[in-house]
Length: 144
Image (cartoon, rainbow, N blue to C red; front, side, top):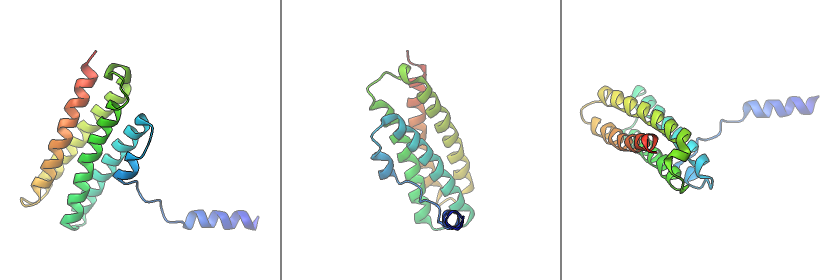
């Protein structure tokens, strides 16, 4: 009984696991799983960017979060392409990628409007990168 209580206390007291980095996601051998992890990382980094803006955080942290958002979205698309299968055979993943990148694009647009004029190009650059990825996912969804 005491061992179980001690183990439970250690699990509860353990710090939360660090979010995966872009390099961790790139090392995933399964392309479909890499896609899932990359699109989740893009969402997480966009949320981190929003939190940095709310907390009036450092511009360098904001720049890193926004760059990772765009790079992770691109990695998600590249991961599906690396399977060698046609987009029509991966329609579920392409549709999911299309929806998630559309949401990211809208989110980044709203974030850019909330930023100061000096910081706005950071978010606009990430939004443009995600927008290009979104168009590619959309073309994959529409292809036969």
